[in-house]
Length: 136
Image (cartoon, rainbow, N blue to C red; front, side, top):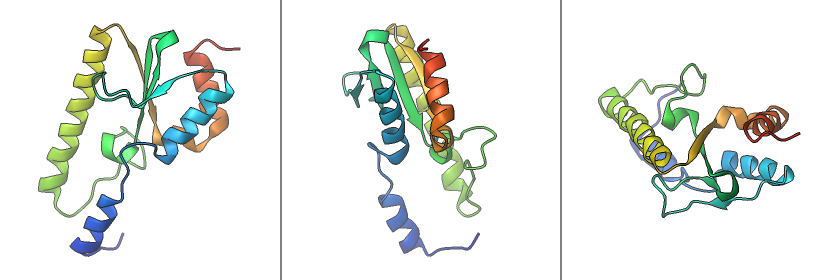
């Protein structure tokens, strides 16, 4: 991996979207095809969930493998430079995810986490969604 300037890295990081990312759109498309109806980014719930299915009392988070540290995933790389910044940043993200998931469960929601790498194969993604929602 080649090193990039701090200006370029900053520009790259600013371009990372928080909502309506490609993996989220893929998941929503697959859910819609399966007849699942949902709301997106509900700010009144802890963690502003990516997808909310009120009928199933279920929350779906679509986590990026890099940012949320998908264990064992090849996309969850750790930058070699500035580890004093990155390692605490990743720890905070993981802890926040855990806390928000627990808050939602305490409110009676079921929480499903889908990983960015799972959205790369729509056939397997649809199979997983069918299993999660007991669909034929």
